[in-house]
Length: 103
Image (tube, rainbow, N blue to C red; front, top):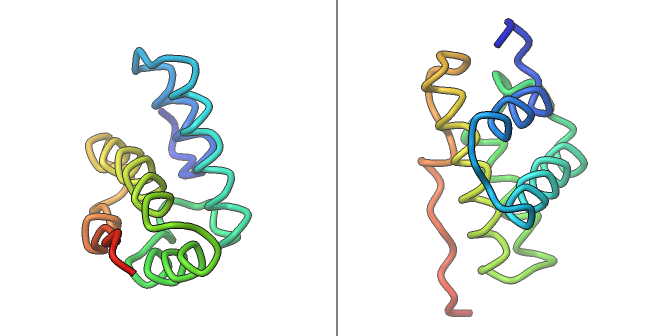
């Protein structure tokens, strides 16, 4: 992967290296695009725990805890991949807890 640290480029690389079902590929694309639309952050080096926390609160205002947990899992997988490729130092999604299904 080149030095471009764009989330869409990372997603393309991740999907090209993994053997995923079409529905899973679609879910990753939807979550990554939702992140960019909601946060306006596409540079993965700018994704930090504060941005993730703000996004979690935004998501939970309009969606269920299960939706947040799904978004978190997908984005965490992408950021773990980026960390393994040494594109980012840490995965900030690991610092933000999953949502409880209890209201």
